[in-house]
Image (cartoon, rainbow, N blue to C red):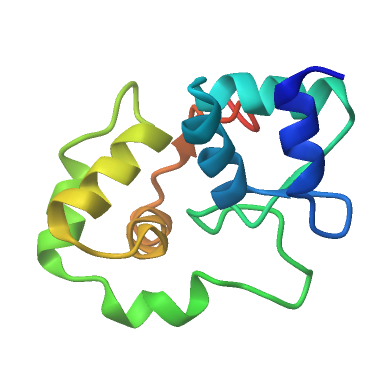
Length: 127
């Protein structure tokens, strides 16, 4: 087992790799997040708890619901001004959150409200 596979195996929660842990192992191992995602996929490990709230939560948990009332006009403008080919790339959503100093989930809530799909997951979970 290579070092990356071993590191991933130590971070699983209920047999799945939470998104935040995937990014942490990528940084620790000095690899790209997509490398972690690809390694997890090869081992049939699913990514859970997307930091944008898009997937990997129990059926009764909807993390974006609680954020909808916090979407501001400034955030709407940021989200509508940055799509690429009609979609908001994951990296751009993260950048908006960083620029505005807000939770990533809030960017997703705005995108959902505006009917803008987030694509190009940095871990390769969706394209």
